Image (cartoon, rainbow, N blue to C red; front, side, top):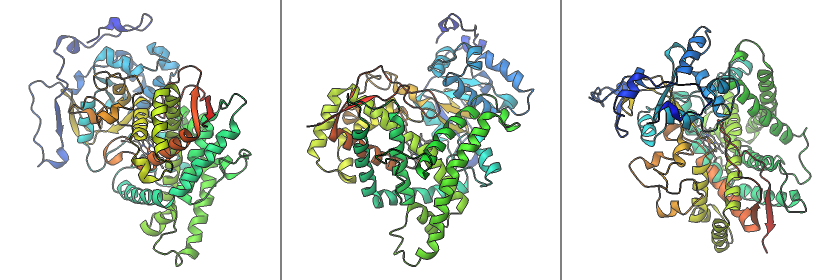
Length: 547
Ligand code: HEM
């Protein structure tokens, strides 16, 4: 275990609680799950080597901040979660307080100082526990009941419930029977849409290749905002999957800011930034309209107004189409949700918005990173191109049968997961690392740290797709290896669109690799440490035509 000496020179002196210093470190492998919702299944846990929740080590500084918070009646664990994420993203105020501001390895430092389980004290006893190891994730996820809970973004919740009166906060944050019903409908329709919209997804990738040709400068390089172009591809693809419509995001002559596509792009970009600002730091916007809150409302309204129009049009046209639809064959995903699953209008809207906010960003950032890794690893690119050449045409089946392409995607998601921190609110008491953690606690699991840990992956920092060919778990294949990297999350609340995202990313990578040799001649690009991690530098790739 590290001592306080490991903290950098200008950091505050953080003393570990006495109990932590004197006792033996708990064994990492002990996992007990007390599912007291189903008393028949489990017996109470009795262990001789168990420690209470209060014994979990954590920073004294945050305890002091907590004393301050507890005088302000709105601060809860949600805020603690956001503060952590704010610190992770280099937030200044609290970051400076802890002398860890701007340090992307904030989580890592916590673990180094306090051990693999860290408790951060929130107001009213509602704390956040940071977990680091795969076996901790296993304990959390295996304890999930039928309805797992993810901690929510309070700003989005307020917007949806107060401003738009949807009554629902959307599938990403919902739980319970309503969420389960919506989730099942989404799963079914997304699967269906991949089959139905496959050719359109394919054509949109071709359009992206053409767009690259238009964007290239005389040195065959992309502009600084190439990530935005990847976003456009991702949006065009998702619009056609959900609405059966092309929006023109990839228009050769650029995007008019007043077109529907232009408004959606501007709205989503602004909304993502505003949500980030509202969520990190103090939630003053709950009482007064801060600039960040006003921006959130403005940008979310922009996206919603356009989507509203299209969703309303689609629903209206159903009245006329209903009889003509033969077995729902020609229905879009949205139409099927309404026709087949009787999904209500407000639910359709929140589904659309969650998919746009989470899905398009995550997919676009993953593509950005994958092209980067291929550019930086010419050996891997040559190998992938060899596989591409052997498969002159790509369809859903052939893409799945390109093992190296699949391995490249997995390896990219291991190194740069779009959502690097998974969160849950415990629905059961659990024991992690011999510490008892009660039901209701917010836990954050820093899964991306394991990706860089030699304990789980040999040559952990290297982009090495071969590891997934040698071993289907990509690492040392121990008992918990499946929890060492979880880019799409885990269990009932894992990503609902994993298959769609994989098809889109595989198809685009196949086409780009088939047409161009990818190069990158600037500084190393890493992931920003945010809820939705993105590349930290402009993606100034050079795309050289293949002969
Ligand atoms: C590479 C692309 C993507 C990655 C890495 C990714 C990753 C994730 C992760 C980590 C979660 C949380 C899982 C958990 O907490 O266990 C999630 C949830 C979710 N994702 Fe994705 N995602 C991607 C693409 C998409 C796309 C394209 C869509 C929509 C079309 C989408 C829609 C959702 C939704 C709606 C949820 C919430 C599911 C629920 O709570 O039931 N994602 N995603």
